[in-house]
Image (cartoon, rainbow, N blue to C red; front, side):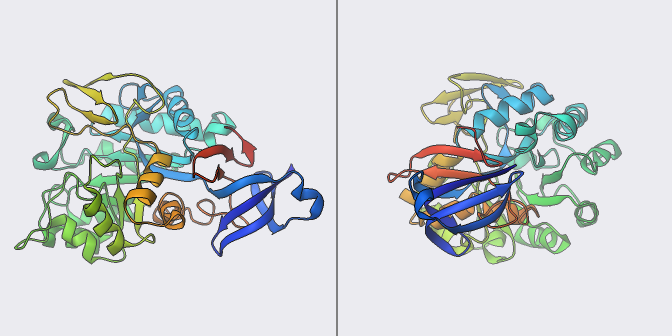
Length: 380
């Protein structure tokens, strides 16, 4: 089906264009052209930017993926985040047992094979955040499940029916040969929850790791005598770094410094969202503890350990633009084109250009999100 919309401004890889008509066929953009006089009478006023791609989504809509990995849970999460502009996502399984990991993979496979079209369009694969992490930097992850890889888990990670697979590991827990094996199988490897030295992290990068999961948080810090994981991330201009810009995980100036170093070409915005996004729940059972909401901050009951976030992607973009000295254009890129490039999906999503999926967000003059389009259909 051929469909068109006309917009006042649209952000393309060439920059902002004014008064443009975007035409799509079966959800793919086929042309972007100057609007004619009749088309201008039905113009959408505002700024059109690409839909967001969140590579770290633990939950949403009141549910957590770990609690009950199923196609229904994936659908609930996807719909909860769609209203905030996330038109592509990787549901994320936090460190858990092998059975839960396998169930999560089954759920993704079910959605991608035969789920509702509106949900299939959103789900790009899965992120396994663990369990091959460091206990010293586990954060809210359950220590009893942190372990070395087994054959059963390798089989889950290497499935070919679950879309793109992102795996977060600690370099001191897995070998460089393991990283090489995963990369050879098409798995995207990121470094996170690690207390590794700079040399260990660099070895992991040399072995094929291409990303860092929530930079600064739960990883060895940059100090005068040891660069740590943070130093390795900032020194390597070819690796991508995720950032949780909720102003709780990072000081604004720490974020600004790293964003200036990595630039919009390698910095990615993520939410690390828990079940609270798109829901009014205040407390969530999580293994042997609870996750408690304090305004826009999630912690364990003692308030000392951050436990994911209740951040949505549009808020992440606005926080980055308004508070970290980043242009709206670059903040948008960090939430769309850059994660798409990181996951090897830049030919399909992340930009408003011919051949891409017609996933758009319309912002008003105050940059508030007013409309969400997925596959050219207005969904919010």
